[in-house]
Image (cartoon, rainbow, N blue to C red):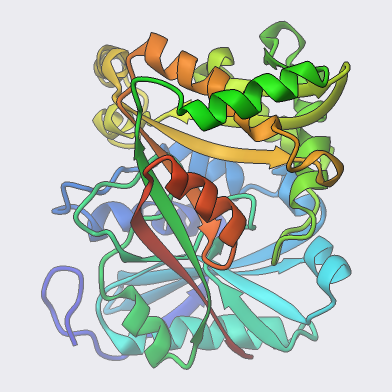
Length: 378
């Protein structure tokens, strides 16, 4: 068994995180694990600390227990156990979750961490464990299983190639695959899409940009559209107003109104498309902290970002197949061309979501990465 820096891992001890010192060790372990990986993008420490704080809106309907695995005093792994009461109310499947998983390539470490999480979930009456989700399906989901040759896109998972085998070795089985596509920005809208978009305009549909001066109201509008459009998808739970407001606050500084679009039918909101530039090449330069020098490097790098991530696309069920998506795509393409972006990553998308996948493939999209969610009994 090999540790993060080549030493043997024996006598693994798993302990719950307590106090500031324990939380600091939990947050900083990935920095040691990925120290020599040029593709990894260090998250901002302050953001990670904030989303694990009891004041985060997620914990109004959930609870989590953080665990650290140590060997000889050195941290060799981490994992969170998560109970999401909104998920249990929506799906009634007895599922708890694990997330924020990181570990050295040693089966004993992953097994010990999952053992503690399973015991914690059992004590709360749950019957299975699923993950990783960090901390819900509104956030990063799954472990990367294909696409290790490319750096991660904004707010998407990244991990070493050995993670899937660690989780399977700990008794978990694959339950869902998620995919992301890369699409080259075309020089023009395909004729068929243009025709569908014009027909939709003839039926009273239009697309407008998000108004940043009314961010609170716009956030609530997008939340209602998101919940209506995504509510039937596997594992998805309604996003609360507080969660949406918190997300908007985190993204306020990087939001691009040209890439946040709302579709209306005779004045009634019916769909949305939310994209963000892939800030990861600039975020990497911060090295997890906002310092004056790091911020200067970030601001310089963010001026020339080639990629964009499609964060979410939703059309309410009663207006699907009426050209709403074509209108959204037309306006988004115009914005991408104005801003000089060269490619788009669309994801994540459930592997079984044939309708959305066909739509992306019609634009020439190719699967770039695959992620996997695992499940097992507690």
